[in-house]
Amino acid sequence: MAIKSFKIQQLLPAAVVILIAAAFAFAQQPVESKHNTRPEVMTSGTRASVEKKIAAQYSYEFTQPEFFVKHILIEHDADGRGRIIFEKKNEETPVTEPLEVSPAAMERIAALWETLRFLESNEDYQSEKQFPHLGTMRLKMVQGTRDRTAEFNWTNHKQASLLASEYRRVGDQAMLVFDISVARESQPLNAPKLMEQIESMLKRNGLSDPKQLAPLLREISTDEHLPLIARNHALRLIKKIEK
Image (cartoon, rainbow, N blue to C red; front, side):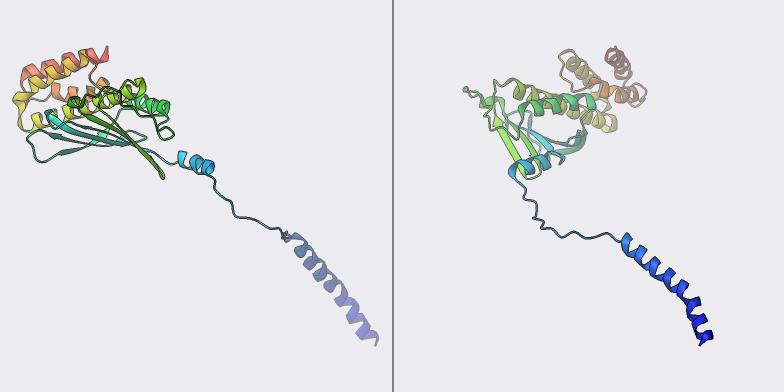
């Protein structure tokens, strides 16, 4: 009996330690609180707030079948990256080119879209007077499930007019770059006239961002496939742009 009692006394401390450890582990477990949770209901205001975080897509379209460039479509994202599609009269196949609006031009464009509050507005930008012979312009913005298109051939709305003008300059500059690339590849004798066109557009503020053309003009100034008069003109244009 004495030996058995002694063995029990030896085992007791170990059992106590095991019980204490188990109790401590149980205390560390998080206690789940029971409460009723209802699924979040997204209101129209919440939905609009969420969609504002979604990147928007923008487009500008111009159509006038009788013009030399009868159709232009510019599409881009919030960073100014996208494409331009244009179609010239008497040509069956439209030209599609990648487009990158410069940061400076994109800042102006984004500010005008914001000022218009385009998606929140239903304002008609068309003036009372109609000038269909000048062509039809369409502004479009898509963001999430929301989209809106505004169409006009003439507008007295200042911001809408400025936005259309910005896109017109973007388009003219992009088409000019395309014509220069064609001249360098297969029509070098057209280069002098294209340099004159750049200078004319510079004088009347017809380019979206002249500084964006500087790298191209430097390439032209050293391109021995082009006439010397065009190369020298490119150097003069660079100086004007960098002033």
